[in-house]
Amino acid sequence: MSGYPECEVLITGGIVRPWDKGIVGELAIDFNFIPQFKVDFAIIGASSIETDGTLRDFDTREVRVAKAIIKHARTVFLAADHSEFGRPALVRLGHLNQIDALFTDAPTPPEMVQTLAEANTQVFVAE
Image (tube, rainbow, N blue to C red; front, side, top):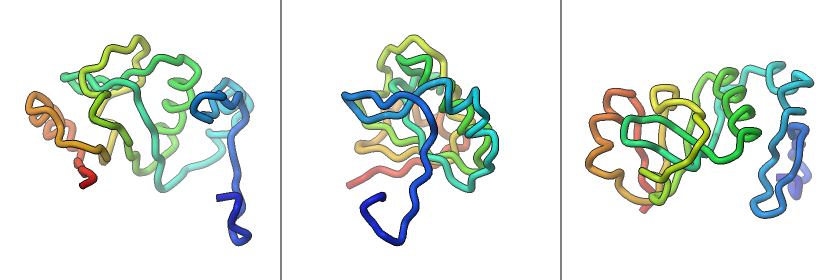
């Protein structure tokens, strides 16, 4: 977005990971950057979506930031590809019932249909 002259880009403080350019770290939370805002839409990722709807990740710093974002958003979107369904990861991020819509690249596994319905999470599959 910073390449567009009509856009101003505001980012959180933290560490930029070299492998995926994700910005993570306690600076985003500890210096009250995220809690200052109430956003209409938040887009988060997760490394794992378990059959029971638990969302997990590998990086505790990223989980802290994602939790703060979820708390301060009116609508939360989760972007996840098919490899994240049933994938093991250690750190609990949250649950699908905190997610308004899931955007993914393939139909969800059959064992997830009821979980998604109970969580009231809409699913959008990219074609």
